[in-house]
Every structure is written in structure tokens, then in C-alpha cells.
Length: 514
Ligand code: G6Q
Image (tube, rainbow, N blue to C red; front, side, top):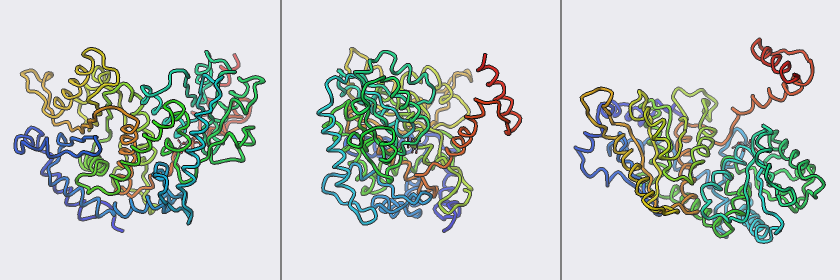
């Protein structure tokens, strides 16, 4: 296969970029007064306005051509069909099966996995409905993909959450995380959910053991449940497999919030809302799989991301939710996007000669406006932004929502069109691109649609960059070295690292003994 940059569709985009790069969004809007209504797409109440991007209809046509040349359609079909597209781990990639309706059929190694998915969902539902009434606190112990989804969903859907339970999330191996999360809880009222696909993750197992000690003499089977693919390790830890909810190796950690990893979410919002969340995911899965690319939200946003990273040289994307409930959404997306596409080796094992995954970051509006937006408006870097907002607040309070949303609209307008001024420091050049995602209200189904939207943006970009978006080898080396260093911190052992690491460890040893 040709390298990406040798494809005719790529060359056509590179030529087209030469024409576009000097054009201001002011000019593009003046020359095409209806683009603000035309360069939009909508699915199931999620409205995308991408007109404030530095594109024309021709750009979109060429980007869609690139997606087709890179066989996005075939690769999408392969993912949904359960082919082993995670080649470095020889695994199928089927988070989409986790939200497939009962009765669907998706085969992995010849076996339909949908009945298993629903069997687990049914067990989770039964567990939630007969939760021991003595339990008042739920503490999810997990890290990475076994933490960020549950935390984000808990925060995002707090409006729908039961208020008679306290939810806490412990992830960091830093003991402070556990101590602070449990400081005001009573062991007899606390249920720990140990969420770990492998059940061998250092941070999670350390926290789980600390939790077992913290419980004192209380019975483990009443205060622990496990979510894992590793029954043997769960048993070894002392948790009865009756209290274990399984999932499968074809679910990647960062794609697992709709698996049993979502148990804390289901407890918080109830099984019905959890099913609505899954339905939102599924609706977006189907939209991605079937909608024409010109109207396909994940494909359009994925391609716009490619346009900025590979042609404009943008290094980051700011995600700016104008909804306080989505405060952990940028953190969630950081793992989803950067662990998936932060790679320099192609599926063919070659080093890329083009840029890949952007850095994702962001904070909820309007807080960000009073800090880093300065750089987005007047800095020297081009930062494409995704603005997310809702027409109706879940907490209507005086004029708050109109004030919030007036800022939301004002920011994209200011970024795109800027403002002239006599003094240079007061000039806003504008021409800063953004997407606007506007929906009526933040519901469980809408959250599902939003997360699946970004999952498929990541997939679209991974296909074009020709990456394995589903492995994460880049996190391994640090883990291995940390294991080697643990005993060196305790004993007076020989240090065989570089001079910097040796000196730092020596200093640590001296200070920890004081
Ligand atoms: C996600 C990664 C990673 C993983 C954590 C936790 O895609 O694989 O973030 O989720 O390392 O792993 P366990 O669930 O196995 O504890």
C-alpha cells in the first residue's frame, strides 16, 4: 500500500491547502453567505456546525475522497464485524457490541457475543435492584480505562443520579487518593467495586488490598465486587465469582465504559437510564456505520482534525464543554484520543512520515475564558476548538443559562471573525477555527452519543493515519522500570541506572529515612 502522503487524494489536499491557507474566515463567509446553515450536519438532535472551519465545500469533498481512498468504509465494516483489527494484540475491537440491541448477532471466532453482553447487563440490573440497603457508599477502585469513563459518566449524569448514596473513585497509587476518598466513610456502609480488566494492575491491586485492610473484620463478600476478565485472579483476591461481572478481551480499557466497568454508573443513574445511555451509543454507532460521509458527524469531525494536524500543522485540539456536568469530559477524551492515536508506527510496522494524534485538552466554559483563552485568541499557535453546549439547562437558575450560552456563541464568533483596533494589542486577528456541537439537553442518551462520536472520530483518524488505535504499548516501559525500582527504594541495593536517576533515588532514600 502507498504511504499516506503519496496518495493522490493527499496531494490534492496539499495543493488545495495552498489556496485555502491565505483565506480568512471573514472572506469565506462573505463569499458564501449561507455556509453557516449549509456546513452543518445533524443526527438525532445533535447539531454540528462546522462552518467556522477553514474549509470550503471543495475541502470537504477532498477530505471525503481521502477517507474513501484509505478504505474507511471497509475498515469500519471490519471493526463492526469483529475482525481482529487490533493486530499487535491479535484482538477483535467490539465495544460497539456492548451496546448492540438484544437479538443482534455479532460473531467473534464464530460465536455470537450479544447474548453474553445482555446476560451481564441483566446480572448488573439484578445486582443494582437488590443492593444491600446497609450500603451507603460506593467506591470504585480502578485506573485508566477502568476509572476515567466511570468518573466522567458519574459527573456528567449527576442530575440523574440517586442522592442516597455517596460515590467515590480511587485510582492513583498515591495513598492520599484512598485516604481522602474514604476519610468520612464507615466501612460497614461501604461497597468497593474493584474494576480491572486484568486484575493485575499495580495501582488497582494496591488500592484493593488497602481497602481490604480498611474494612477490618467485615466480610469481603459483602463489601467487594469485581469487574474483570480474569476470574482466577479475582478468586485469588478472595472475591467470590458470584460477585464478579465479566467482560471480554475484545473490549479495550478506554472503550469499556459501556461494559460491566459501567456498574458504578448503573448504580448511580439506575438501569433504565443506563440502557438509555447505551441506546445513545448505539444510535451514534449506526450513524457512523451507515450515514454518507458528507453528513456523518464522526467522519466530518475526524477529517477536520486531519486537515488541521496534517496540513495546518496544529498540534492540539481544545475541547470546551459549556456544561459544568461535563467537567471531566476533556480528561476522558485525553485518554480516548491520545492513548489510541499517539503512535508513530503504522499497522505495517513502519515509522510514519506525517503527524498523528493531536494533544487534547480543555476545561469547561466559562472558566477557561478567564485563563487560557487568551492564547487561543491572540497567541501564535493555531488551536482548533470543539465547543459543546446545550439549549436547556438541567438546573435552570435565574439568567445563568442565557449568560453561559451567550459566552458560548460569542467565543466562536470572536475566534472566527476577530476585531480590528488601532492598537496592535487590541487586535483580534480571528481566523481561529472551531466546531460547535449544540444539543437540546444533556441526557444519558446524549452523553452516549457524544462519547461514541469521539470514539469514531478517533477510529476515522486512526484509519487514515494507518495506526493500531487499540493497543497501548507506549505505557509499558515505565511500568517495567517502576517494578525494578521498587526494591531499590527499600534496600541499600546497588543502583545501575543513569547518573540522574541514581542521584534522585539516593536523595529519596536519604530523605525518606529522616
Ligand atoms: C486503556 C488502557 C489502560 C487500562 C488501565 C487499567 O485502554 O488499557 O488505561 O484501562 O491500565 O487496566 P486494568 O483494567 O487491567 O486494571
